[in-house]
Length: 611
Image 1 (tube, rainbow, N blue to C red):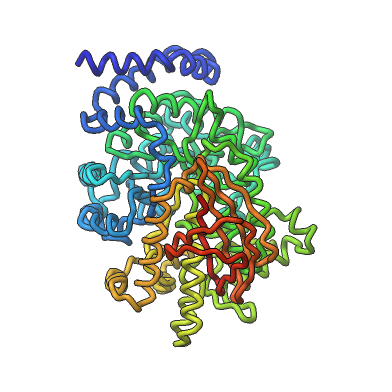
Image 2 (image 1 turned 60 degrees about the horizontal axis):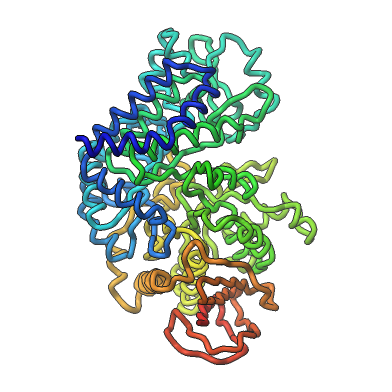
């Protein structure tokens, strides 16, 4: 007991002054609220299991544990992957076979069936959706994952609750304290003032930022009418949501994904996005984790351009999120697939190369949501590409409407006026595997497989943590079953959220199947990346000119090792001059090579290591 008490006091001693100062500044010297928060810190530390405390100590000794080149992530919906949490436990060998040691469990906390927003409308932060299991099942899963060296990530939906949360129910009944947790108004005067400056998130499916209730009251609902925004200017909200976060951390969650974090602070007369108070809240949450559960990391969901993303890392002296999503690169990657022109993504890599090397991004080709075209349209305009027509071209290309396109995707939130639709589809279907199989065209299939593998190789080359969406490792295709939903509960995002097909996944064991070719290639990429320190996040990198707008070049350097990575985004062979004087090793094939002119096959890539 003395040991753990000293441990807690040591951690507190390093952080309590700043934590108290920030809390008092934000909440106007609310000593009672801070004392309550201080009690929560003691409570959740004492209730933390000894095995998790031991993990805390291990990671305190190795604070860069997540910055290496040996972490490979996979994101999945529990029900689609294996029916429920016990089903996931039975599939842990598959993670090991796939080389996965970081698993992002998509939202699984209790939410209303009819208005769940895919689990992002949480009605109880301390219960698992009943059909998925129980909190005990979640604890068993995280414990068994830890024994295999697998970390678990879970979404923490902090901007809002479901309108069926106990706080919302009490607010409907007139409970003044509960109403103070949300933004309630009895007329439209103030909401109308907010609407003058606050953009709409979903103008076609959920217009406006407020909803009128049956009682006549008006409540702020930034995302959907059944998701009520929490008022973080109320210290009770911060304290109780922090307690919910710590509860999940004590269930064994290693990475807390802060959902929609830029939106959490609202201020009249602003856009209610990225306000300074947001950073104060995230900084306090970071310090509280460092005190109670220092093995737990915060992952920020900031779906914005790099200039607005980077501040969520905080500073070296006052860090906030440990990891952020590399959203813009994902969109720019698919733009490059459609245009075959690498210049925009080269520009993006120049921006990324200037960021501090302690920043860790999660890199991915696609996620559970749609692909939004958040590109640098000012730069594109200088190259003859205007925003609206370019978005239309991209959407036409990836839905197979553009002549010669082999992609098969669908649009989400299609606005015919703004032409601002987003894209849905699995990586394999967007690369042309689905179309080739339909046409029974072996040549086209081989080309599509090469494109799929090349894109994954590009993702593995980026600094940070590569995250595969479940099914992409075996080339899973679009699932059109959601169209059969007559109640329209499912939208086009369920095209790529389909049920994991274990029967087709078994095809990975056959050497000549497309599933097997993709699976083995990704495993090799993962293995090579883990074996070569030049892929660590701390490595220097920058784009290099290849002489071809179809070929992206990336140079990486770390402790004397140099890597030249080349990626052909074209269906035609490309020659690239190679001006390194030394011989090099093709890391993917293991061959020693000396030629000075590289010919990349269609959708080919090269990892050339020079020591």
